Length: 295
Image 1 (spheres, rainbow, N blue to C red):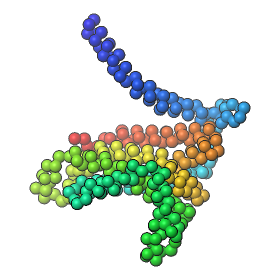
Image 2: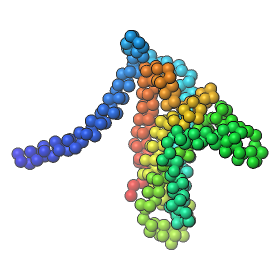
Image 3: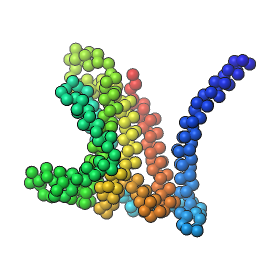
Image 4: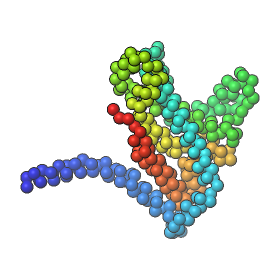
């Protein structure tokens, strides 16, 4: 009886410790998700007309919306560019600033500085870079005789221009995780590889990269989420233009929800985003996790 009472007290104590986190999780994650699902199955209330049940009508409208499919294609290209580029650049920077080089502290600060800047401020900085005829990029390309280019106003370059901003903003943030992982490795591994005559590339491919896989998985999950949730720089730089050439899913959701005030359709878009992110996260954790080599 005493043993069972002790176990019961431990269970109550454990649940009480978890209660604040559970309340916050239910209030700000689970309840909003369920409420959004409910709203996606109803029409948008307007004036004195309340919302009515419409079933899957909002999803049917979404499936027939050409702007939605344009945003999907744009977001796929945006993700395919930002995820590998930001991760690869972050790893390269971390490997560099982890070496004993002159000015290492300054380089680390320079690489990390874009991370602490608000995305709106970053977008305004790059807006100066992309300004036709007077921007910094125009000044540099003009030295080589290239003609003036409206980077944000051309359908062929608008998406690539906003992609470059996202990579510049994200790489420094991911670098911190790789740098922490590199500094946590045993220095004797490199010494042993040098004694065996292993090249730097062989040491990276056979030793460093497998040991960095847990960090890479974590960074990749964050990169995928960022590829879907980034919208601030789109609002500042292009507003989805020209002709929806740089419209991403979250910006399209923002337009539908806050410009056209179509709450039902915006809720349907939100549920699609949640489903995509949940599917990608499950694939990453349950498929890629098997390829991760833990120490």
